[in-house]
Length: 81
Image (cartoon, rainbow, N blue to C red; front, side):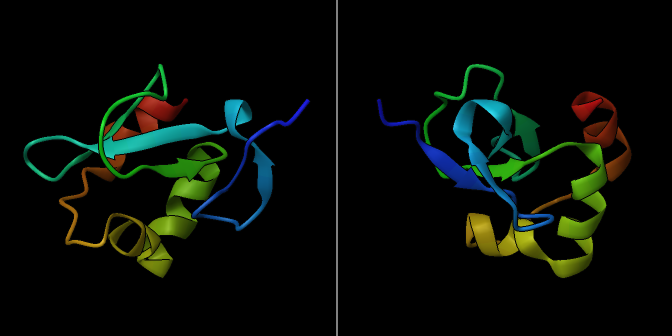
């Protein structure tokens, strides 16, 4: 059986899609957690809150979403916990 894999934008590690947390942009270009992993639009995947800091430092979220992203790192990190 085929298991879809995705790459964490923070650390670059490949894992099964269901093990990662998917982020999508809301109407204000702020990333939010997509708990069901089926929201429309581009998604970015993270292993967890530790990889968020790496993604922010590398500007990986802007590249993944192909636009400027309004980041509220503290709230987003709390949601990923």
